[in-house]
Image (cartoon, rainbow, N blue to C red; front, top):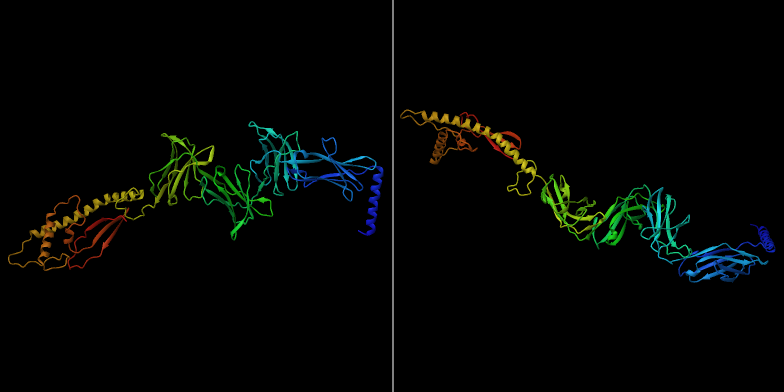
Length: 576
């Protein structure tokens, strides 16, 4: 801007102001407060009044007062008046305006200024229904309430754009006053931070302390994080509890929500390793208020939108009821893989639900409604079929439907052991105990059944062999050599020759046994001594392996030149 243009503007303003003063039409002054018009009790505040050049004195008036509260000479260069309040109290709260007199004597008054003092009443509560977590584009209802009987509430939205709503309160049957404000189309385009105050109609500038801030969390569709706790889902009262939210997306911050609670604590994300971000939420010693259902969210610093919610995590607090249920198992604590197992939780006290917890399990414990039977409230937790994954230590708890996250004391621990079944071909234990499984009994049953099938065949083959030996022995007994003839050459029995008399005696005994054995008997031994007296021969074995019969031929032993008799068949049972 050139110097000549500046001079012309100043000349025009001076001429215009002189003309307004001569005509008695000076502009209205403006009024405002610093640091603001809503001041906490005990804090300082300054009220400013600005007029035009040449005003010598400003006046400040409080609505309801008969005379001006303050008269303040204008400050150099003569266009402002300053009114200071060093300690805000209820008496300073109200509606103000400021004014000055024109040279012609006309009064020039400003618009009103509402000066509010906060802290006169206890803070109300501010909540979001059904939850402060809202999906992008969704709706929510804000509720401000108080037990002080306040009959009006003012709800303010902080940030840009800043908004406020004055709401009439309604009294509920319990005497609590509250007001509802529906908020629609919540998007992550800006921040949704709210507070509310309450007041009485007859003192509209005397407010309560502000409520705790409420921020709406706008969840989107980005990848959900995981929520877990190192302590497990069942914790004891007084135990330290920490929840951990983690993700492989690389979020800059995390938020934690508890169902039914309005607080949404936030933590910056940490990166324990590349590609992983997480945040720990220490909740301190466990109390009843920490019991409930939790979810967590991840977010980026440059966006107001949060991720999709994590899967829910239930925190159950044990020891809150004076009850200790009992836990038993059928058929027993040691079972074979594949069996059906039932864990029975019982209590003599009236309990509506039972929970079964496995030590070290990450999944939430199953919950069943109780049944009254035999003087007990009980629930049966069935596992069928069990595997090695069911090995572990179990406890059960009782609970009430009115407090589903508060549990009784834990039952005594029960150790469940699932043993692997006997493999095919393995021998059953010598002394089967209660651990013996169904598979071993099936193996025994199959073996016995096949034995009954093969036993008649073995006896038949045995009988035929004995009949041939009796005929041969009878023929030799009827033969009488002539007198003086030499003894015939002894028949090769397939045994090593020996000059010891005991050998001849043994051969004679075997021959006598063959003659005397004229009839087959029940329970014939499979290793009959007569078999040893026969000439060397091919021996065929029948061997059972469960339901399969296989034949094996033993190699022939060294022979004399005599042809062998018809081979004998031996049967043997073997369960492999």
